[in-house]
Image 1 (spheres, helix red, strand yellow):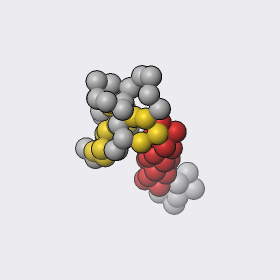
Image 2: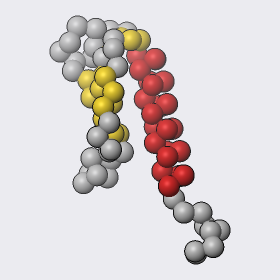
Image 3: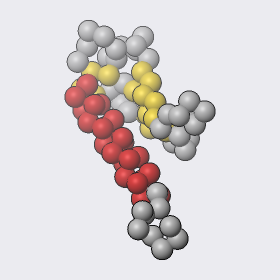
Image 4: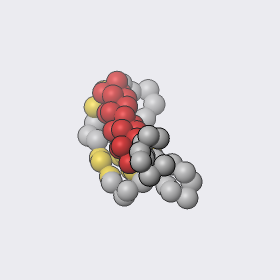
Length: 75
């Protein structure tokens, strides 16, 4: 993911029953740059979207906390 400049990939196997198109549910795996994997069980697509958004906000917060403050004495 680092080589591609990606922080997160959401993968879903649309061949699984209850996942993909023409269904209200999905089954996905979240993969992040640190190698973290989270398999989400079959759930409503709105709930999947919320979990993705939660992870994106987590990653954003982590990146911001790792960034040096523009007002730090070292700068």
